[in-house]
Image (cartoon, rainbow, N blue to C red; front, side, top):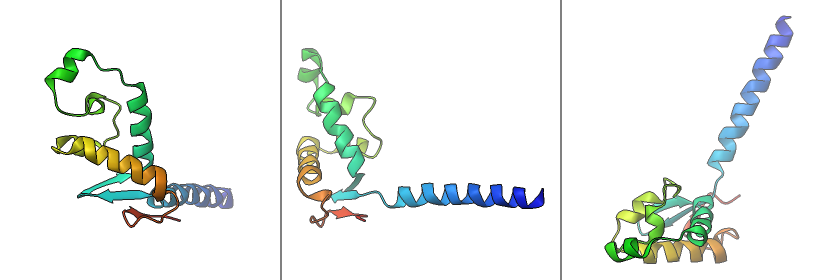
Amino acid sequence: MGSRAVWRLSLGAAVVLLVLLQGSQSVRIEYQGFEVQLESVKKLSELEQQWMPSPRLQTQTLLPAVCHEPALPSDLQPVCTSQDAASIFTALKSIANDECELCVNIACTGCF
């Protein structure tokens, strides 16, 4: 019975270690003082395709419409506080689409 408990404990520890390693291996993009995950930038593109803001909202704010989306990943939310949010989002999407997954852009870290 003791060896079974040790086996379960070591299996549980291995699972936790694997989850931690996956989290630390994620590709991150650093651009103009912002650090975001590649997966978040991909989610940004999906949200922009789905987002249909009201015309009234578009005239009331200079922020990109996606900044009003509750599903915007938390690591992208600080970008919305920048006056250059629209251009930063555009640059992040360009880096992610063209160069980050291949890890040829110096803005990308955590490549494996």
